[in-house]
Length: 50
Image (tube, rainbow, N blue to C red; front, side):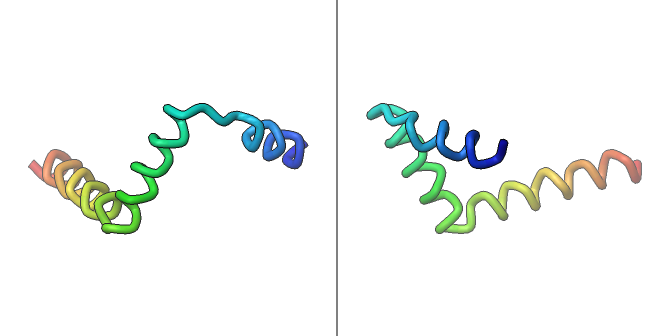
């Protein structure tokens, strides 16, 4: 089942999705995904503590 899903994902190629994935990957390379996740986590903790 997992291999079928991976094969399906590999067949989905469009110019828009290719650019979108390059953008998402660049966010991870710059650490933006970690930084934004940290900020969301801090806000949630502050909300529960007050």
